[in-house]
Image 1 (tube, one colour):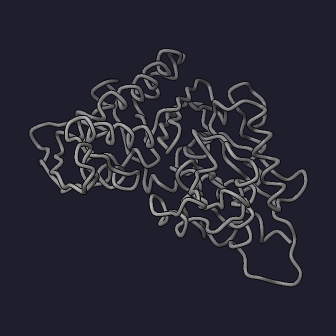
Image 2 (cartoon, rainbow, N blue to C red):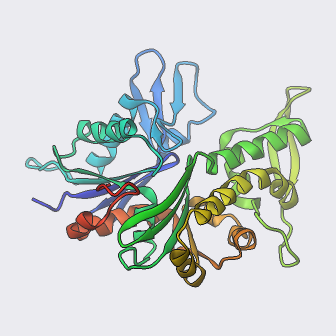
Length: 343
């Protein structure tokens, strides 16, 4: 009966599904290919992502979750249903799953309700959808003791939002959610290539540049790298290849990363002094895809004068956190949100 319970990290960039007793069984892009006329879905996940920038006029590849919130309800519901069904082997008799699903800490009650309705429409059990703030799930998944009477700080940099939270005794004491994250870093890289090299590149190319060259903090130990980037020349309209360096990307993303570090500093400024002392001792933990940007931990440490740690397997921290809650249901009653209510 209870083997179908699951945790879902419904992210802007990727959707991860944790199934009780099995672990993370799905890690797919939050991307859907849709017919622009009939609204028929052609592909979901990796298959749809491969179509980005390559579709005919009657197909549109969309991300139904933007900045951590649902932007297209029907498509999100269909995507969730596909992933929920894919998480289990087909059987004649099946129960609807209980679901723990994560949302950014800064979303409104209306946006939370939309997530619940999408989960129910996708097949979750009535009255058994639990909403958990993403930084709380990330902290649990990173192995932090969020239930102790001490300060723990987590920064979760996703695709659409960056979440900062101070957690103590199972609750969020201070938090900041900014809609500046991985997608904005990609956009900054695209703008740099267009401005400095007069070529247009697509989303996938910008993401590949980020993964290969992005560096948050350059010092004497930083190795300079370069890569050939292909795009369309703005003047001639013909394909063109240019070389992009680590320094180019560092300069392009510096302002975006500053917005994220500013959110961390603002959260620290609103933290009680006793918890600040704990954070100086415990340090700040980084999760999410942004944690993989080279030297981002050094940049954050330099800006805050705090020790900074990268969580083990930062890409799956949120999903792992939902899994821990699924495997230990008593934790759900111990987790409270920033306003003191059950998340």
